[in-house]
Figure 1 (cartoon, rainbow, N blue to C red):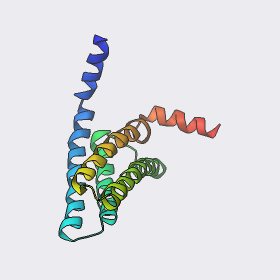
Figure 2 (cartoon, rainbow, N blue to C red; figure 1 turned 90 degrees about the horizontal axis):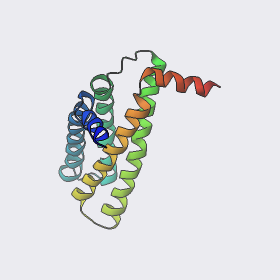
Figure 3 (cartoon, helix red, strand yellow; figure 1 turned 60 degrees about the horizontal axis):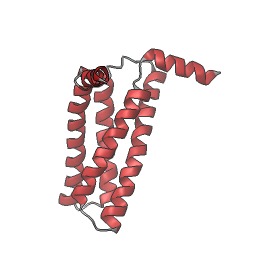
Figure 4 (cartoon, rainbow, N blue to C red; figure 1 turned 135 degrees about the horizontal axis):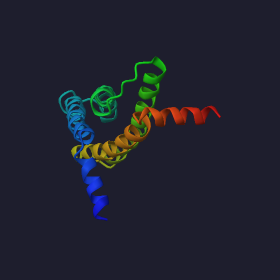
Length: 152
């Protein structure tokens, strides 16, 4: 048990996790800033504002995750498209959950816009990390094995 805790602590304090958290904070701040400027200052529909903020934050997150967090060196078009596609697909799943929550709890049930935006961000961060770590930016040997298995 002690070894497992040490192993988890080692990963939580690793360069990869620290950078994921730092860029996640930047991505979240960007997402929140865009969302609240659109909804509060420009009176944009909450669902549309959620979508616009999500697109911009997702593209920022892809670049920073690829380059700095997971240090992906892929340059081949097919590999980059795989990364972008799986990255975007994972985020589309968490986006759909968040969008549904905003529509239900903010628009229909008239609950706090701020509280539900923060709740959806927490859900998205956890889901996005899982997709990025284990699908999008997994090590090349793992990707190669997965692609070979798909061909069979």
